[in-house]
Length: 347
Image (tube, rainbow, N blue to C red):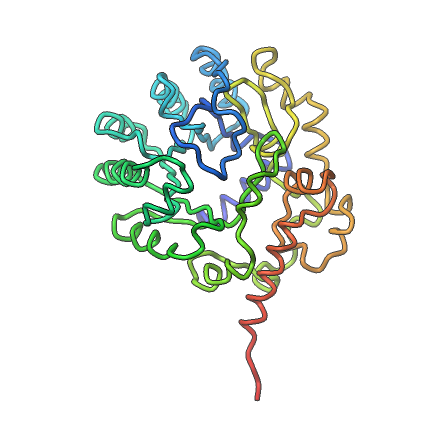
């Protein structure tokens, strides 16, 4: 069996059996950037999980079948015990990802990361310093980020450069992909700007209009699936989302969430074990029970299979987890237009 056939089956089976295959652990909400689109509502929130409590959590996740572990923030490298935690995670066999803005990476940290055999993901909004710093709201941030990225690549550490697309950077994104190719990294663009975790919609004002995103979707740098390419909708009878089915988000306060942006905590690790929360939370059970037939009017929409609807965004945009997500509808409009452009024109 090839990896390409094995992984989807693993993911589907984890969703069916409610195995927390993927977990994102926020080590801190502290950050040295103030990115305008960031979903963290309070950068001063204290880190309430001790090193020992996190170690116990990692042991529990390994026992429950977690395979993919992401250590994130805030800026995770600002937490003093980040390497101890990452090393413990690696020793337990997790496939490890580190989310960092790259700006604090120095020789010493790059050497430590090299020992973890982890993939490092860094947001690189633009190669234009003015645009980059407008987003991060920190002078000199592009120079520091590029230096960190190159220290990682000098050590042949796998790096993924992420380009969250918004009103500021709908042009020039090609230069990020070119830079990634030049240094041996990979790059990915994503136009989904999400609300803050407390439901504040202020970040949504940064979303780019569909017309402004068309060059990205036409560029070939970002996949734009159409119904014929997807075939029959694989979500028709099963879980619609990884959230609460095979994915969980854990905040630095100990709060367990179905995903990074879906309002509502399921419980706190300072009071319960992860297993108790994962298996017993009424909120998680509600989220994981949602099926296509529960959604109205999405259930009968011909574009459902490629709109990318998100429970969290439906809830924060319209107040109803089962309702419409305008951002998903806008995405479907883009896909439909790309699909139309691909059709042959007959004289």
